[in-house]
Length: 183
Image (cartoon, rainbow, N blue to C red):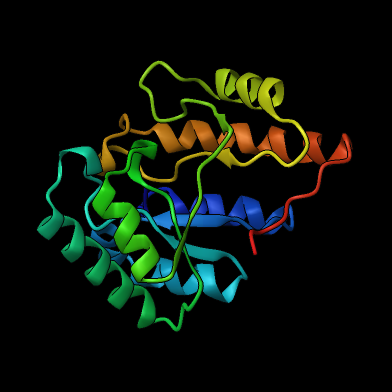
């Protein structure tokens, strides 16, 4: 839900230390404010994906709004030479228009099967860790968040995600899991 100037760089640091690549589903409103972080993601081999222009629930949006959302998002990502665009709809919610425009703009929709509710106020590094470790199985797609209150999460929530990642990544590697990017 970022990038967020307070948190995304710290998460990138942990991923770099652990030699893990990730997909960052970006809210274009936030990406425009943090172009340096987008450039860093790309330079470090991460995938930059689309998570809407301003993190709105697609089920509540019109065709015109949705068309503009995808058009502007596609334009922004093309500025960085991103050709294969992965799209994660906010809250996993779509409408007929979002599915149509994702296809029109050649975007591949990505959902998840492991969610640790890391954006919630009551989440702790321990609860995020436990949920991830309990829910991960072969070929899981883990959804965690680098955006805080700018995109609807609790203030400081990504710091808890950051602490959890410091345990999750090495332990999953130790259990034989590999972290791979979508194709």
